[in-house]
Image 1 (cartoon, rainbow, N blue to C red):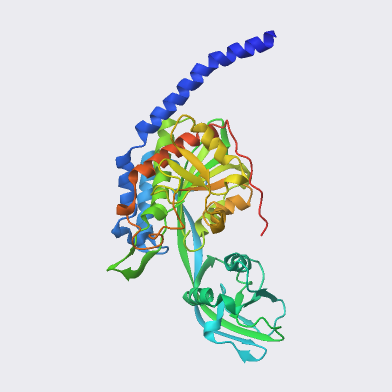
Image 2 (tube, rainbow, N blue to C red; image 1 turned 90 degrees about the vertical axis):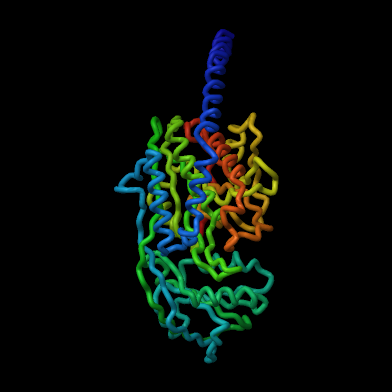
Length: 439
């Protein structure tokens, strides 16, 4: 009884101090996260002179330089082993020169085939090649993604019911591709549209031109006090589509919502946590490159640290407008896969903001953004968004400009993330791990 009494007295004594600390944190959020600074950052990133921040373009280099300056001004440190804020790596861009495919002695028409490969190759037969079929009635996106990412050579026979979407596959293959140096060079994929008859013989001759090009994420950190080897990641991608087909005289896909809004949130949170303190865990802030062409920036980043040391990842993807749940709301992809969401909501008790589960499960958003690589490794890595992706007519268009955004919504979401993450960065809460995904 005495022990219980002492515990109760201690709890009563600690409670006012805890509430006071919570109130101080909330006041800091309102004091340090300002609308005018948020607006300045996102306007800069989505301005026409950034040329849509297309991968491998001058615009993305200009954007990276701006983000570096913001990280430096915030007082962040480069990641361990890096001299500066750029996390550099090389990619290989390929452009097809020629392609010829024959099945059972008959040449396949160019419009009925698509070859994806990181190097030239010549198949005289099907030795070592897996023949895969995508019959009618399947989820083509899921089937295609699984096959394209598999570590094996494959001849893929696609049912003619997918003729419309196959045109996009052909067009993409003709544009060429981007891959890590040496990746998938030995595992080309050949897609053929036509009857799914048995293939008794096949030959493929494919020639491509390859050029190595540099890319870089922009990343900084605030070392943790008592748990420096436990990481909490805040991320967003700073690339977009660049210059696209003109519409009403405008050809710049500014990417204000996608994802200048998320990158702005990352920068704003970096500034806030540096000034507010309270992080027992190490906080990493990273703006990823090349999300739009395959998520290469986040893939590289994930290989530079031990996933088991990442306690949580807040990937911020398109927060520029009200969500379908109304003002002061956002949704979390993969909500049901860990208790990440409930922890955030618990930290927001007493506020008007609420996080909801992803309302678009059919879009498979959990594995379509930069959180995916770490999530596959078991990290409670989730994307936070407000985008009404099923009705967003400005998505991936020249209309995604600053004028279309609601700054108030962006600021509210950034503040909610600052408050919602506080027990995680303080080392008091650790979200449950996500089930690892074997691929």
